[in-house]
Amino acid sequence: MLATATNDFRKSLIDLQVSIGLSPTGEVELPQELEQPAFTLPDTVEEAVKRGLQRRALLQSQQARLRMTTLERRAAEGALLPQAYLTASQDWIKEESMKAQSGYTVALVVSVPIWTGGQLQAQIREATAREQEEIAASRTLQLQVESEVRQAWLDIQTAAANLITADAALKDAEEAYRVATLRVHEGKAPFVEQIDALAALTDARTRLLEARTEHILAQARLLRAMGDL
Image (tube, rainbow, N blue to C red; front, side, top):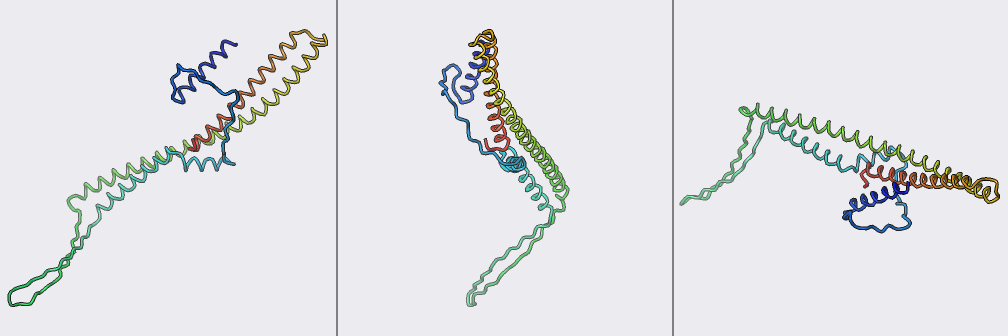
């Protein structure tokens, strides 16, 4: 068990070094006590889902693509409509022995896409199809974000319940070890009983640490699902 624990510890140090951009061949000095990060979490799962839909970068980029395809479709539809152009100019004439004369010319030109109408309609259909694809993709991403947020919320609740259970189990193990120690000192129990109680106490402490770690990780996963990490 000691060899396995030492191996797992060394592997976790390698993962830590890689995650922070260091070479895994170096040594890392860890503090004796780690402060628990102070996460600011929403009060309800609905608020968490709302924040996720507003802040997730993946969803924001998809919504930008949807707006772009919508503008392309509107531009294609506008090209099929008659186009009107208004122009104005001023004319000035001066001949010998005559007064200068000036006038204004206003022209209205209407362009109707007759020969290119079929091509424009095809462009509209293509732009509409792309827009529908982006709408479907946006809906899929929204459902994905909401699912991730709700699952992370459930993980936090489960981790919190496991943390309470592990804390209670540790208190029971501490009391059991205290009683076993007294029984051994008074000669009412063999020494192996104290050893077994110590093993149970060590296991309870390990489970409490694991429960605390899982609770912190569950909160971090929720923040990531909401787009805060």
